[in-house]
Amino acid sequence: MKKAMKNLPKHSEVDTTYEAKPLAFALSMVLSLLMWLLLGPSLSRLLRPLGIPYLTANAPFLAMVGGFLASKQILLKQPLKSLLTDHPVFQTSLFIKSFLIYFLSATAFLLVDVLLNPHYYQPMTGSSPSTYLLMLPLVLLLTPLQTSAEELVLRMLPVRAINKGRLSRDSRLQLVTSLVSALLFAVPHLGNLELTIASNRLVVVLYYALFGFVVTYLCLKHRGFEIALAIHAANNLFIALVCNHPSSSLPSLPLLETSRPIGTVYDLRQLCISLALVALLTRNQKES
Image (cartoon, rainbow, N blue to C red; front, side, top):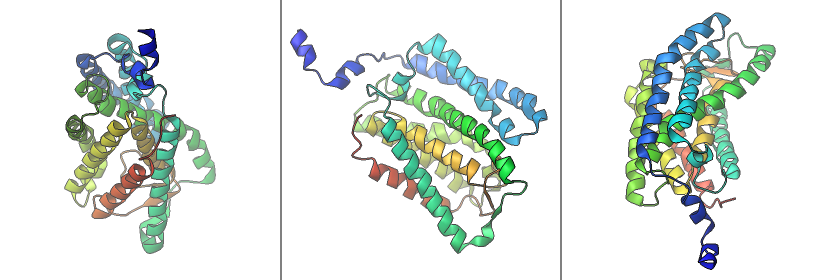
C-alpha cells in the first residue's frame, strides 16, 4: 500500500485536500457581495473628506475584502492557496509571465494609438511628478487588492462552487463554467460609469463578458487562477498609472488622459489580441 502511494503523481496528493462544499463557496460569495453593497458606500462616504477620489472609489472593495475574510473564517475554513490554485504551490512564474504579457500588450497598443491619433491624448490634468509619486504607493497597494477581491468573489468562489472544489478537467463543464463566469463577471460591472457614456453599450457589456469567459477558461486549463489575478491587476494598474479616461469608474492620476470613445470595436480588438497573446505564450507553461 505504501509503495502504491509513493507512485502516485504529485497532484494526486493535492487533489485529496479539497472538500466538495459548493454551498459554502456560494454563501461566501453572497456574504462578500453584501458587505460590498451595504458597507462599501458607507466606507466611501467616510473616506471622502480626505479628498482622494481614487481612495473613495476603491473603498467598497475594502468592504468586499472584509466580507471575504469573514466568510473564509466562518464558512470555508481552508487555506487561501486551495482557492487560488490546484497545484501544490502558487504558480508564481505563470503569474509574472501573464502580467508582463498583458501589460506590455496594453503599452504597445497605447504607443501605436498615440502615434496614429495624438489628438486623443494629453498629460493628465492636475498631475505632476510629485503628485504621481505620492499616489504611486497607494495605487500599488490598493489596485492589486481591489482586483484580487473581484477575482476571489466574482470568479474563484463561483467557479469552485460549480466545480465542487477541485477544478474540473471535463471540457463540457469547463465551457459551462466559463459561460456562467462571464455572466457573473459582467453583471456587477453594468453600474460602471463607462457604460453610461459608451458609444455602444453592447460592446462594453461584451467586453466584460469576454474578459470573464476567456480568462476563466484559461484558468481552468491551467488548473489555477494565477492568470486571472495577473491579467486583472495588469489591466487596472495600467489604467491607474499609465492612461485613464476622465469618466473612468476608477479615477486616478496617471501619466496620460485619453478622450478616445469608449465602447468601440478598437477596445474589443485590443482585448482579444492581448488575451490571445497570454494564451499563446503561456500554453506550454510547466508546473513549478
